[in-house]
Every structure is written in C-alpha cells, then in structure tokens.
Amino acid sequence: MKFWTAVVIAATLLVGILAGGATIIGLMAPVAGAAEPAVVATDPELVRWAFASAAGAAALSALAAGYAVAQVGTAAVGALAEKPELFGRMLILVGLAEGIAIYGLIVAVLIFNRVG
Image 1 (tube, rainbow, N blue to C red):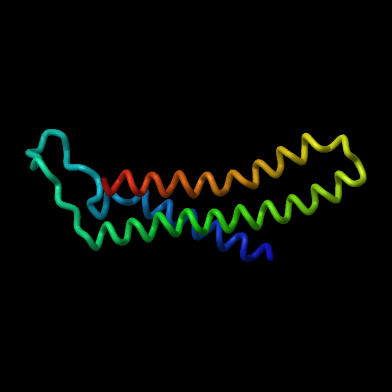
Image 2 (cartoon, rainbow, N blue to C red):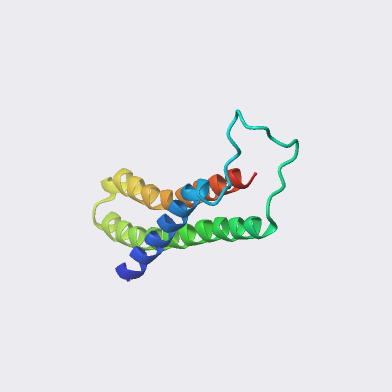
C-alpha cells in the first residue's frame, strides 16, 4: 500500500514539475520589451493538455489525500480509544494528510494561470 502512495505523490510532483517547465514550451507571456499583439492566440492542443494536466494533478492529489486520511484516521481512532487526551495531536495529523489535496489544487490553479 505504501508503494501506491509513493506512486501517487511522484505523479503529482511530476505534473507540478511539468507545469513549472511551461516556459520551455511557450506558455509564458512574451518579454515585456517585445511587441505584443493585442490578443494572444493559444494553441487548442496546448489548452487541452493543460486541462488534462490540471485535472490529473487535482485528481491524483485528492486520491492520495483520501488514502492518507484513511490510514491516519484509522490509527487516530485506535489511539483515541485508549488515550482520549491525544485528540488535538491526532487532529493535526489528519489535517496534514488533507494538505496533500490542497497542494494538488494549487498546482492545478498554477497550470490554469500559465495557459491564460
């Protein structure tokens, strides 16, 4: 099970790296000193890949967060059954597991910003 968690996290990071490398494939705006047309036409194929990448980043991170919350939540319930005073600590751990989904949403928003 830990293997698939690592695969999902690696895939999310790969999508983020590919989104960060968008300057190589021409998603960034032209240099400020250059003459810019009033409307910049975006290649439909590029937009299609951007939407697919953003959806993949959000979906994979949501799956990873769900798996992490399931694992941490199960352990938290077991620990709370024995020591109820650990509630605050367990709540923080579950919140950290949910942060994975937020990272995926941030990557998706960054991809959309690059496309325009």
